[in-house]
Length: 309
Ligand code: NAD
Ligand code: UDP
Image 1 (cartoon, rainbow, N blue to C red):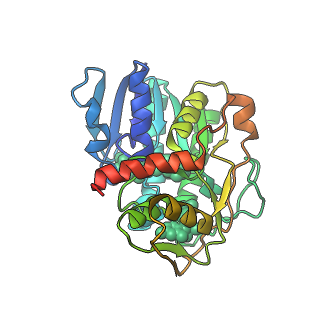
Image 2: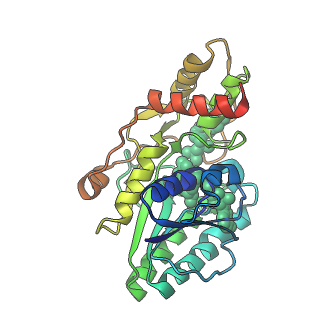
């Protein structure tokens, strides 16, 4: 198959590209390199089944493909809040352009949505039926509301144009190739510990997240795309940790000498998050396999190598 991966030079996108190339597909990787890097996909440059397209999805593009994995959008709060209007524009106009492309060539379309559509959730764990608690004028809204409108557009293309669509609601995912300056919690703690700097816990660290290793997530995306189930489907690891627990784990794995310091909690930071993955188990026969300790070890090794520490 000819498969387009938008955001294919990014963290999750590049791991997805690896899997699709290994399965023998023809892969078009589209990226504007805002947070993606050529290093993430350099292993495929020059391969006859691989094509790299530098393009910003807020502009339309004409391509011929069978499937579209639509991942292009900054995902770390630091990066999506740097230019929030652009983030909303990417989510709305970018998704509109990719849906238009899917409609023209009758390609199956998978949207990489997010647990952020649940905002600061009042239902725990979060099933797909939960409609969320998002502050639509807050600092996270450019991303949260952006993904909500992207889901709306995706479903309306499905209803109005009979487009085959899939929606994945991805929960916090980590692994090799996260940027050193990504700003998300796993990469921050690992980079800080490797450099012997204090680990920065925001708030008192009692807020929770559930961390999914990237290979598990990519398996879930591929299964969803090739299933008969439209979704939305939660994809994430249901093992829930407080941020302080995560800091202590990274500290013990990398350097027990480093300190933990407490910094102000960012605005609208969700207090708890854990996916209910009943649907993924039922419709995709999918559940995460990689335990946190194993995934953290692999991520630490990758950062150690890249930072030469
Ligand atoms: P990432 O920032 O590493 O990847 C995003 C990619 O999209 C980058 O390569 C970036 O350069 C590209 N991009 C951004 N704006 C673009 C534009 N206008 N045109 C073309 N390319 C553009 O982030 P990630 O963690 O790999 O996330 C990938 C997708 O998964 C995103 O849609 C994100 O919202 C979603 N997601 C990720 C997580 C997570 O924990 N990693 C959780 C929920 C949802
Ligand atoms: N966080 C933290 N220290 C950091 C970075 C993040 O304590 O250096 C916290 C952040 O406040 C949030 C959690 O870790 O409660 C997860 O943050 P991240 O940015 O990784 O993802 P998101 O908030 O989007 O789930």
